[in-house]
Length: 128
Image: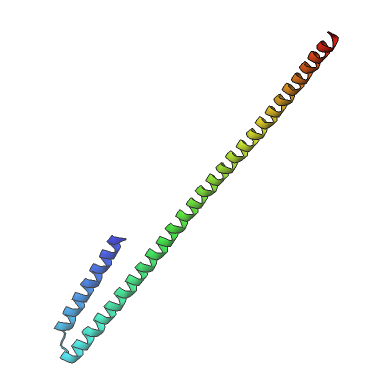
């Protein structure tokens, strides 16, 4: 993009210099010549302003496009991270529930074993 700008600037400067020399060497009145030069320079300035405005608009559009792409990719990464987090939480909850159920089952078995053992001891004491 910088090379394009340099080429355009060089062409505009060359055209201005050529036109100025042509007008200076033309057999016209001084006032007419000065008016012609001023008009031509004004036209060149306006053309340069238009080119600069177009380049600025293109740069803004390109910047906006890059920003939108980066924002979209970042949103995708955040979404993926949230999915991974949700899966990890669900897995942890499921394993915690399994551990709780297993512990309650073992506790119930131990309670039953103690109850049976105490009943056996009580029966032994009553028979003696």
